[in-house]
Length: 348
Image 1 (tube, rainbow, N blue to C red):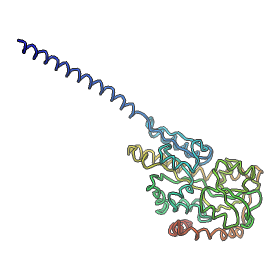
Image 2 (spheres, rainbow, N blue to C red):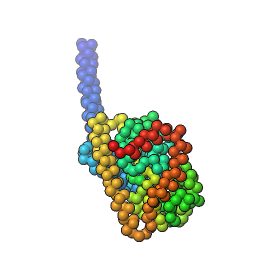
Image 3 (tube, rainbow, N blue to C red):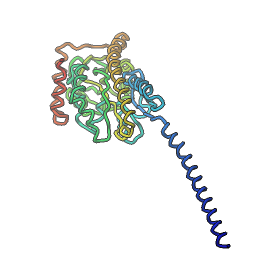
């Protein structure tokens, strides 16, 4: 009788234990599933950093990408754009992206020298005749290959964004290379750009873009090179008495992200983001061409600086003076890339 009673009690206890464990498991599942659902419902945040104003071509493209990405992926993606180096200077964005402190940026191609020397092809003076040639090069195998040249460093090139052709400015006329001798010019961090000014007897000094206006205003530097849109939106033309229309180089950007961030996104989301970015870049590049033409006219109309145009003979002097830089860097960049760039000057 005693044994039967004990067995009965044990049986009831076992059933209670099972019921209790089941309830605990069910409670745990109920707690976990909402947490997972909340996590899945959170949108992917893409922080996009750049150094220019929202009115500059790059700034407008970033905002267009935000608009298109959030329209294509409502509730799934949020793009936060940080202009005017609010988060990082161009020299810092690649490291920030690799550390996961930033998802996207569009630094000038000159900023990738520490990762690959090939992209220095874009800095060679008088290599591209115009932005049409740049487009043909970038859509060809050489240009597309350069987008992938950073993959080994964990960086994914998503596309090229134009600003435009660069002009020279100073507080004196620059009609022939000898006019620049002894002057100090601000440049981006680029060995090619450094050589470009050294070869004409000028001195190149590397400073962040955000410091240029103050450097010009205080005359710590004598001049700089930039596109019409950058000269206008940053008011450089107001602190330089002369701008010479040289069209000697190209200012282009590469839109980048990290392979770690990009590869973890769902395939469908990547496809939508790529489509949004390609549309934004196409729109942005057209906008850049329009803005540069308009900003040139705005600068001329302002009367605050003298815009000077080179004669064919004067331009040839600049070309001949700077062309030795090509040979100086051909071994570093690759003669094949230089040849491909030159071939892009031939219109179909």
